[in-house]
Length: 256
Ligand SMILES: NC(=O)c1ccc[n+]([C@@H]2O[C@H](COP(=O)([O-])OP(=O)(O)OC[C@H]3O[C@@H](n4cnc5c(N)ncnc54)[C@H](O)[C@@H]3O)[C@@H](O)[C@H]2O)c1
Image (tube, rainbow, N blue to C red; front, side):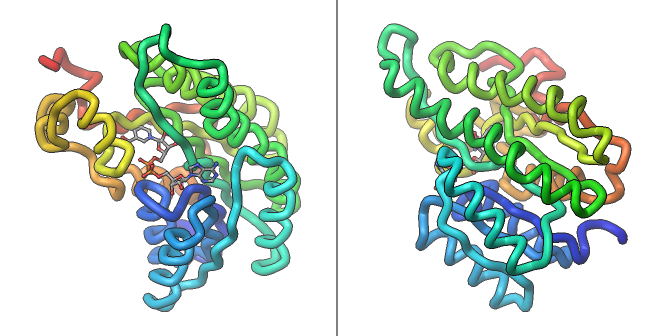
């Protein structure tokens, strides 16, 4: 089987942003896509765009912080499409605040989605992937999971947890031919980056010019291309690895 044609993929948080772009690209390449999100209208819109273009998709309402909802969502996908080959743990939330202003409730809420969501997804999807003789899990971390950034204690710690969880899972699940990799973007043109730009008092274009040697901010499709590659058979010997998608920002001294 080449690429992702004929594979069944689950993309969490696929109602908007990187998740939507990833779901659309998977479908374009011939995969069957389970679009999951807490936002029903947005998730249904992604699925309907895929169906409208002649692809295969289903929308499943799903909060990644709930173990019970993971079990139900994955069982629904397997019933519908006959199995699962790929999970993209994309759903995530973001906020910027100095450490003294972060409440324990805010910390726990963000971790319940950004970290618990990835743990629960991997735990519940692994048996389905093993039944297929293997598969791929792609976890969305961030450059904030590799480097420190002021105001990012909570978000950065959650993405750092996703980075090492990815490697732990790769080590544990490799014997079942399940590959697990993490992706580390800088700002990508989505609602999340709009919030970051607003906090910095800059436009998205200004931030993009400052943060990348390419002089532009990443589009969701720039990240989706890497995710789809890591889900495909062409990345068959890649596991436990981290893929920085930053337009060269980390490779050079940038004036930010
Ligand atoms: N956009 C960026 O600049 C950027 C940079 C680095 C990493 N990331 C990471 O990429 C991923 C996607 O980011 P994005 O920019 O597309 O975000 P976004 O805010 O545009 O979309 C996130 C999606 O996740 C969904 N979601 C939120 N909480 C959920 C939950 N509990 N259960 C299920 N779905 C939920 C939202 O409804 C939304 O559809 C996130 O994990 C984010 O941390 C984004």
